[in-house]
Image (cartoon, rainbow, N blue to C red):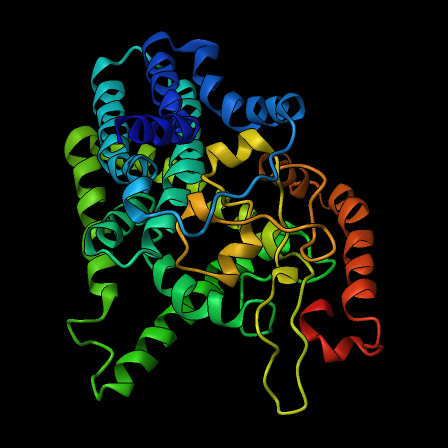
Amino acid sequence: MKAEVKSEFVAALPFWVSLGMVPLAVIGAVKGGLWVLLLPAVAWHAHALIDLVAGMNARNKSTDTDEADLFWYRLITLIWAPVQFATVFGLIAYVTTSGHLSWIERVGLFIGVGTMTGAIGITYAHELMHQPKRLDRWMGDILMSMVLYGHFRSEHLLVHHRYVGTPRDAVTARYNEGFHRFFPRVLVGCVRSSWSAEKEKLGKKGLPVWHRSNPFWRYGALQAFFVLLAAALGGWAGVALFLIQAIVAFWQLELVNYVEHYGLTRQKLDNGRYEHVQPRHSWNASHRVSNWVLINLQRHSDHHFKPSRPYPLLQTYPEDQAPQLPFGYPTMTMIAMVPPVWRRMMNPRVRAWRKTHYPDVEDWAAMPVLAN
């Protein structure tokens, strides 16, 4: 039994690599200068470069693995909320009272902090919000509220998973739609769709939208608490730094959303409904290191196919079943920021995907999300 526990601990250890980002933020805060760029450099570039060396990992863990054997995998997602809380607010207190960093250095530092709260915090929150345990969901809400994006849980669970690849899903990026057009559209669309989804859910129970069970009350209370805490620790400067990391974090989230389903759609059937979500409706990447950092988020097809499946058990698929990206999400999100390069790389892949999976569909209007 002890050998089995040790084996699971060792297997889970690579997914704890995210903790290495915390000391990078502290080093930047203490040393200042170009050191404040250390964290975003690692988050945006180092992991992408290491992916090229470490290669792919297409091995699948058995889906019959006992829940008890996933303890070390789950633990890192649960402890991240207090780790992130201490890091964000500890740094706000430190830089606003020590006075040794210029405003440019502070902004650079908290852009880096936002890459951490976005790439790690939101990814972990995404995992937690899908799990049935109350503790997990609360930790997910805390993490999302720490980046002022609490409504993401309602939008993701009630809208995105149900309507992905259809016109009703704001975060399915349209074919030929650049990220700079996608981002403002989705900021408004997700708030609207998440509020409508909760209103509809309450309406089915005969309750008004303002009922206390509406989770928007919780999102708002948590977000207000974090903003007030930033103000208490650092005044208006503390609030500004907190807002910088939050904006960078949800900008990163929407970059990933953009990449995950770009141009992929579900066909509308004769009965007016859309086909069931299949592995072919998400972009995937089997790059080893970025999957450690993003706790297998890049096995996105299986996540949509089995949304409650814990991240260690997510499966990868062969390319004829699920479309594969040429690089991991960190690299692809950087490319997405340059629309001409993105289109040159991805549009041919979308067209090839259509030819493979929907060879009989001649009218683009039959798959309306693809039409720009």
